[in-house]
Structure formats: C-alpha cells, structure tokens
Image 1 (cartoon, rainbow, N blue to C red):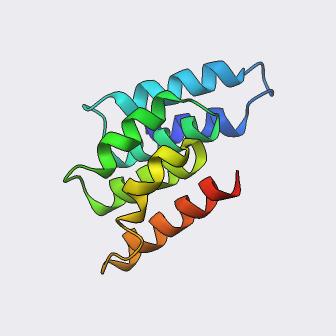
Image 2 (cartoon, helix red, strand yellow; image 1 turned 120 degrees about the vertical axis):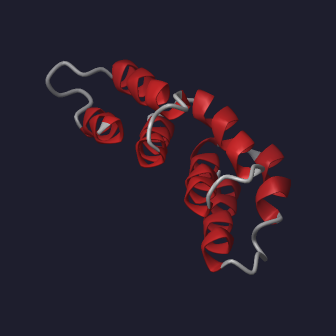
Image 3 (cartoon, rainbow, N blue to C red; image 1 turned 135 degrees about the horizontal axis):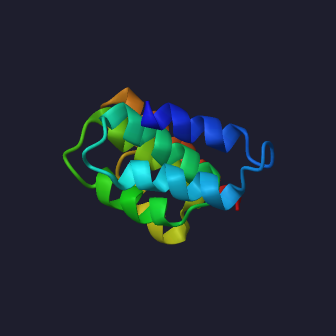
Length: 117
C-alpha cells in the first residue's frame, strides 16, 4: 500500500498542491524503511529516483552489491541508471554479461542511460 501511495504522489506532483519535494521525501521514507513490504519499497525507491532524490542512489548502490532478490537488484539498477554517473559503470558493467537475463538487461539499460548523459 505504501508503495502505491508513493507512486500516486509522484504521478500527481503539481496537482492538488503536491510538491515534488513532498512526493520525493514521502517515497524515500518508504524506500528506506526496512519494515515495509519489499514491493512497496521497490515502488517507492523508483518513484523517489524518478523525482531526482539522490538519497535513492546511495540505497541503490548498496542493494545492487547485496544478496537481495533479483527484483530488488533490478530496480536498484534502474535507479542507478536514473541518478548515477560514470563511477557507477564498473559495478553495472559486471552485470552486463550476467547469465541471468533480467539482471543483464537491467544493467545494460542502466549503463546506456548513464552513458547518454
């Protein structure tokens, strides 16, 4: 539920008096709360990343190198693609030749976004 709320806030920024800052801070709080459901945290992390919340980059970097689920790591790679820089390329490039198609494609997409900037 909290992830859905984060997404709704992001999608309604500048409407109904919802500021980007409020939406970003609310989503980040959910993403960082380890007591939240993983699906809610993933949704919230991506919503906050799309709003430019740099705090999500720190979280994403930590998750990509962890033993978290593939879904968590894929979402973290997406956040790194949105917010990361050249310093993130070595980490992501390790996964561009992964035998796991989902991780490989997520890493390739993130590398492409970073290189496009």
